[in-house]
Image (tube, rainbow, N blue to C red; front, side, top):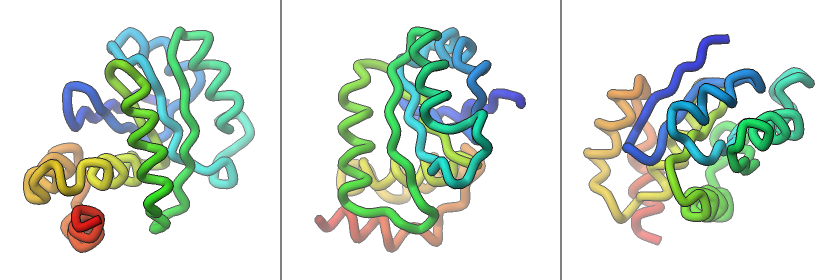
Length: 143
């Protein structure tokens, strides 16, 4: 598995699924926390959250679990992502299957704080077309 870090900002990057052996490289890249946005039911036992958490701690990284079922972006889920980012105290890497859900969570955390067009352009530079997500971002911005 090749580590595919996609920085959205200097303090937040996303990645497709990572492996336990990637944690040292994540730490070396300057990240202090890893957020797992992938439900265990989607992945093999060797990539489950408990195993990833141990690998992160062994590499000196904080680890948070905030699983997202595709299309299920709730206010509580966004609040948990925001809390994890704020608690990190430094750069965060969030991952899921492709990095898409982790990117949408970043957009929703910043809805109403950053211009939607700017966030969509950032997502596009990372390889994600989030024009279809615009209505969701705008709805969160109104909260």
